[in-house]
Length: 191
Length: 191
Image (cartoon, rainbow over all chains, first blue to last red; front, side):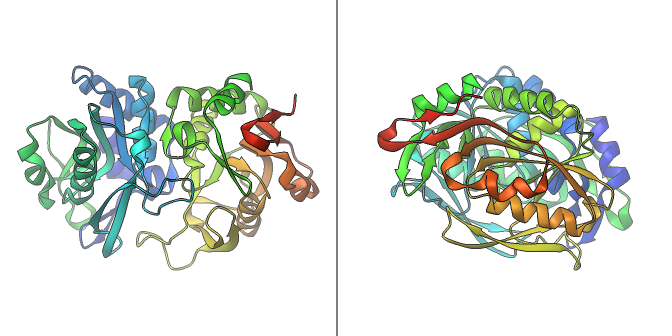
């Protein structure tokens, strides 16, 4: 998606260690018009998968998942990393390593909002190692739901996430695929 | 805002201790169409305040702040509760008591995205005691920005937040104002 690639090339920062900083338009400050365009594009790419719900992980996945869900007219659930007091005692919980946090984090979903038979589209900001998305896949499968698609704003193809998810045999769509970001020079995979 | 009030009356749960559970459409599962309507309504109510940026706090503020920012064509910044590794060492940080967490939480904004001279519209999911919003006000003022409006999806008028913010002398808009929620019977203040 050209508008996203151009924004990354212009404002993204390679902080080293595989960390891409996009805090100016995705991860701290958000450009809502760009997010809306990304949501529209995800909705277009996933229009035929019969999704009944969009699933993401707090915090950074919320913006693109919300705009995608808006264009698809579907509810969106964001997995929590801390169990709020409004959540019932029995929950779906999984552990997943966080690259940017350097530790394991919990992903928690209330059974109230993810049921057997749902067809789930996962949307997140990054597809890197795939660990967070695999955590969401485990939660959905535990709930008896079926994953029918995975979308990420930005894929770092050199971190192997797409291979880690390939056994699911479902469409995986990334709006910007970065194959290298040496010296702040971003190389995008042409789609 | 009638559509929001009706949704709260139908699906909201009073968990006691002043906790209103709206996890089915705002705080865990999100209804994007409802959020979009709320964002449009905030944009309408705040169209004349000359805002240059929308500010909220992660996590639950992101959805209404994003849709408001989309309708106002403004960037939105969400204050972080944990400093990510992408953030510089020097940040704006304040502490605020969290009613639902029963402890103090940090609110952190990078100086990269909140500058002197900005005119800030704060949008959050709840206006209860006003503590979180006052934390955002302190952060914005530290940055040299000016708060020009405050919007909340749901105000619990019996927790005093509006009084705590009244010294700011700026418009405060809530889309649903609850004056009582005894026995799951929600009483809304007519606006």
